[in-house]
Amino acid sequence: MKRFFNLFYTNLFLCNRLFIALGTASFLFLLSFFFPWLGIIPFVFIVAVLATFIIDLLLLYGNNHWKVVSSRVTPSKLSNSDENEIQLQSINYYPFTVTLGIIDEVPVQFQRRDVWFRQKLLGRAYGTIYYQLRPTKRGVYTFGFIRTFVQSPIGFIQRRFNDDASIHLPVYPSFLQMRRYELMAISDRLTEYGLKKIRRLGHSMEFEQIKTYVQGDDYRTLNWKATARHGNLMVNAYIDERSQHVYCIIDKSRAMKMPFNGLTLLDYAINASLVLSNVALKREDKAGLITVSEKIGSVVPADRRPTQLHYIMEVLFKEKTRYLETNMEALYSTMRRTLRQRSLVVLFTNFESISALNRQLPYLKKIAQFHLLVVIFFENTELTTLSLAKARDVEGVYLKTIAEKFAYEKRLIVRELSRHGIQSVLTPPHLLTVNAINKYLEIKAKQGI
Image 1 (cartoon, one colour):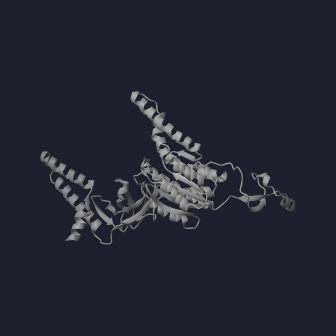
Image 2: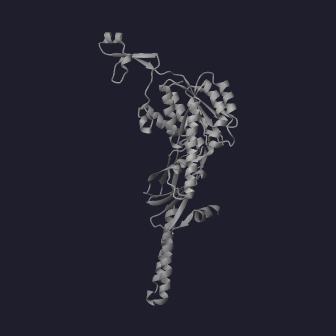
Image 3: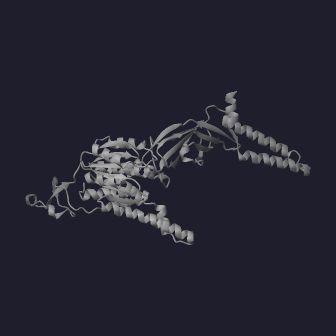
């Protein structure tokens, strides 16, 4: 009884084509009252409709082996803030062409009700549908059933097949963005992403090899003895200093909860930290991580082991915003205990006013005494847009003035940090990764660490 209920009540749906046929039959019966010459035509038509309905029913339910099976192909984990490709694969075991309507139950975090696809499949054939999802929060996402509605060529009814494709997928910090920058760096095409070419002010004196001179080499590194032996111009090649410590410090306080384009500032900082750590490891530096809010969160000592990047990614995956103010005193104490040598310290935080900076400035100056500190904070792009807009009334003048005041305070923060010997980067959120890597490359080129 339960099986009968599921087959013919829960999973059987009537289509518009059947309602149109029944409506036409009703109209013919109505006309037969005014035009007796119609005779039995309405009765013949309704019998034909019922017979077609039964045939359609037999086509969809006549054989237990006739069905459509759907499955979902996903990556092992999703990348936050990136478009992740999802595949829906359907196999048609019916011997005739069917029309499919497929609903994929995507995680509730997306709040999407439009993941509905239509597809035609030939008999004994299979098809694939591709679509993309862009998560904006880290965590575990749960996919549900795949609901497949099968319609025969007659099209009076639909039979629903429910395929249990439930799966839990973690959403990690943007590893796709990390791979993109890694590939661009290997192919020497970083300028396509806005990364600047930094002029070197000098070079390390760590000798690597003697090589043949090519155009662009520094002629001051010519090795005259090797040139005399080989008969060609030869130059000394030097390598950058390696194994320098690079720490990303992420502020998790309430100031980093501000949203931008679907992501919080914390998520932008986490994505940029992952990319920067990967670039540092590729350049044979040691990457580390510290997270802080009202107390110290995670501490990953700088290292260059093969599993370091994976470990950093796992730590960043679990980080969440805390709604208290940053305890810079605890950060300074932790750094004094943990960081045993001079390091490049990149602090991702946000200051909305000069008074917010002044509360933290004494500790920033202490950190800068022992390490090369770079403070990266965010430009409020909405206020910038508002300050550049033309005021059309008195209210617009007030809003424009206030926006310009906040924008000026951001520039004042940069000047104040520079006055105390602290480097800073004021960046829009969407350019955070590019500007952070630019700053790291600039410091490496100037041998600032």
